[in-house]
Image 1: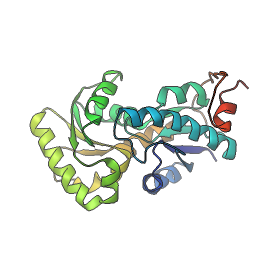
Image 2 (image 1 turned 60 degrees about the vertical axis):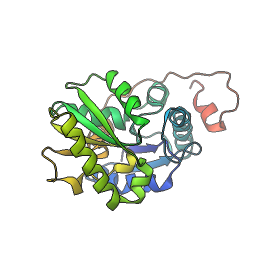
Image 3 (image 1 turned 90 degrees about the horizontal axis):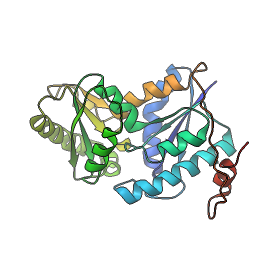
Image 4 (image 1 turned 180 degrees about the vertical axis):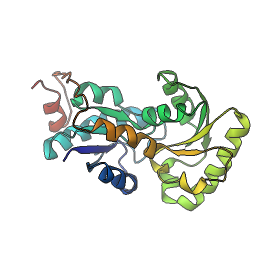
Length: 248
């Protein structure tokens, strides 16, 4: 049975458990084994540029540790709506690697122009920058942030739903051409469903949208990319990551 690895570059075990709970039924229905890896160092939940930079390293480290302990998966879904370390993982993993933000933004854009609602003001310019790098078939019109982080909302889903509802309404007033609202953030997994029918357009769950791409990438006939090892020399890396970056 092929394995889809859900890689959380935050150190929050609670967010990993949330992601696993929502992703497991999708993987099972597709005939896949779901594995979950959590960063071994870095922020509990990424809230800005520095956290994202550290999380990129942590994502590489977590992948190398997973491969050493459990073998290489069929595909990886990098489960942070910001995709820290995505391109480095793609270059070195030797399997298809999907980013939560990239995959879910592409899915949202297929419906037409869209807006993102997320947690934390620092993410607004970061996500706008990311969107400019993606071949979106329709534009991201804007990013609306609430004052609580995704991790805080994951810990209080009932309160988060009302915050997200108010933010989504404001976003649709600011960008009335939006066809969908995309909830962006690993900690927001599962919070789109309670908003269904409360807004004049569909609300999309970033995890569920990205999982479709992850499932397709993990199928046996999916193309396997080549690895681009970087032998260094390196200083201060974990033994697992140092070994993984070597050729062979």
